Amino acid sequence: MYKERVLQKNEMNEKTTKFLDKFVKRVKANPPGVCPIAVQLAFLQSSRSQTCGKCVPCRDGLEQVEHMMRRILEGEADMETFDNMVELAKMIQDSADCAIGYEAANIVLQSVELFHDEYMSHIRDHRCQKDIGQKVPCISYCPANVDIPGYIALIGEHRYADAINLIRHDNPFPTACAFICEHPCEEKCRRDLIDSPVNIRGLKKFAVDQIAADQVQVPECNVATGKKVAVVGGGPSGLTAAYFLSLMGHKVVVFEEREALGGMLRYGIPNYRLPKNRLDEDINAVLSTGNIEVRLNTAVGKDVMMEDLLEEYHAVYIAIGAQVGKSVKVEGITSNGVYSAVDMLGQIGRGNIPDYTGKRVVVVGGGNVAMDCARSAIRCNAKEVTVIYRRRQIDMTALPSEIQGAIEEGVELLTLNAPVGIKADAEGNVCAFVAQPQMIHLYDKQGKPSAVKANKEEIEVPCEIVLMAIGQDIVSEPFEKYSVNPRRKTFETEATTRVKGYDKIFAGGDCVFGPATVIKAIAAGKIAALNIDEYLGYHHKYLDEIDIPEPRENDRNHYGRVHLTDRSARERKTNFEPIENGLSYDEAMQECKKCLRCDHFGCGVVEGGLPW
Image (cartoon, rainbow, N blue to C red):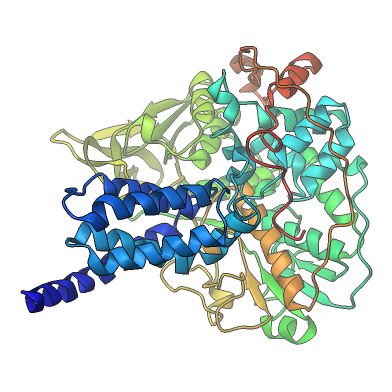
């Protein structure tokens, strides 16, 4: 009987080990702000509820372990309680009659080993560790971790210049993001528990509308270090890295292939969404730090070699973005009148407005680039504009506001239709776009319902222009020997943003994680600057300290959300002038009052996790 129990226990131990491996991975992947002791306590409670109650170790022992763990979690325990919990867990592990008892005890012991520092923090300091404490939702959901409650409070005090500089503490593009950021910070705004999220982007736009960003003096630079860093690419990621490295005291040289700085902010976003003179306000402020040299019309691999940069500079940051449009292999793709959406928007960014007068335009795709193309085609005097997308409207990746704006301006959406081919006339000019109707089907691995071919006849959409907006590609051939993934064309980097296998080469932005949002590219540039600074042997501090107002009493009256409005569709679709109206003073102050100051109430004071 004893031998059978030992064999059974050994077999269960193997199963337990496999289970623990999965459990440990799960625990390590806790969402931000979740205390691992709280997770363990929940697991222990679940295990205890499943015991049969016949043996003492499960029935009484797990209850005592749970009681002691709760005291530790609540900061009411001492080391004696901790030691007693560990000893009792060991006893249960050795004496329980079933897997429920000894697996639960085993996992308690594993958690003590894995999260020993967290247990000690609860016993010694009566609180979670600083990096475990509940995060402020808007800050944690902002890829750049901008202190949003802080700058909202500054706007409420009419300190607009300070608000802009507080944003710059993490994001040197306050104006650009005020116009085009997808504002993920608003997704989990706790004000939504009362009425609706604070209009964070609208308040940022209000601040930069009161005083231009290049009229607000940037923080003072640290003492010059004598180190030189090359930044390849003058887009949002490259310029962000250049800005922070410059403030740290390093000399930065930016190599930009095109004739002006800004990357896709300038060459991928139409003027009606982001006026170029407003973009220049951010760029002028970045360059005003004084440690940045810019070399335009200079392509790495053509005008200057990567080997030369590695020899001349102490570090190199590659931020070349995703600069060209993807195509799709369908019949007739080489016909006259078929263009890449990225190329079309790039020409508009250069001031070369195409003339589509009297022409019918088809745009293929469902993202923001597709909406930008469609709305730009309307402004280029197109007779008709049709967007063709293989899934439903609700599945489009474009912002709902962009889709609605396009519809208001006269764009037709032809959803659940997949590209088949392009018909051309005898001269090779486009005359129609052929699409195959689709039907919605099973959900895919990304959690979206897939679309499959429907048992319907193909349709033809008469047109003279086809704009392909199905994604962006990365031109990384000049760097292909520097750990570039041949399939995705992205750079392979370590956690420190260093390119794998190379000490002094760093990379970030779209060329690492693929085409994404501007704020993610900015965040990548910020992190890369911090890592490069550490690599160069420094640990610089930010020199500009801003006094953030003390929180006022929360206003918990129910308010309607103040939305940003657009100019009327019949007026705005005739030109490339900015379409969005800003907040009035009264609207801005009302939105400021709605902020619940989660940085002080309910989440703990923000202490700026990164050293910068």
